[in-house]
Length: 287
Image (cartoon, rainbow, N blue to C red; front, side):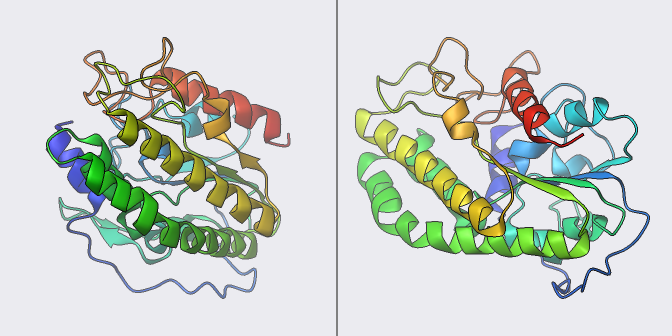
């Protein structure tokens, strides 16, 4: 997947929202839904990771993502993966139109009274947070220390609490749609380390490395607070991925280039990163 196209998807440069889907379902969501539904953004969908899911090509969804891996351990459940690159909390409810013209139904509309498990990976695209992180802190052509400092130190502190509230609202709506379902919120793997230096795959200045690490830590703390408020388990992949940042010996996320061997898109999970999420979900999900 060319970097320009993936950034455009993540930055949501040309999304058209559809009519809103009411959050007041009163526990009367659609019946006949899959037993396990996976919702979320590109850290769930797994762009350029193994064989693609051709159902909706514009979503950059892989059949090797953690949702598919987890579903394979529970063949008795029906399964639907509706994750899509570039998704934010609003789009989960409202749906959107992709750059290729594909009209997506709201991801939450796939959840109903018969759903017994929902995994959720969302939040980092709210308020264009991911796009800003890439533009101001990570991508060599646009990033610099001053802009990254303003983004991470001035803009993002206003975003974290709003993101937390938005995720709580999503989790509450899922519980309303599927009152019998176990709902699990999944955090994001780290890109940059808390200590050390940059590397060829992620050539950051020390200032930008610290800013990126702080952003990731704060984002996952916001998600953790949301999970606590909504009373659902939180799989903290920021904590779990310590020692597996891009510059480590065993990275769970790719650096600034797409993997040449089909092991994921740039700045997105590798197969090892997806397997790590699956392993932690297997410890949390009730059988």
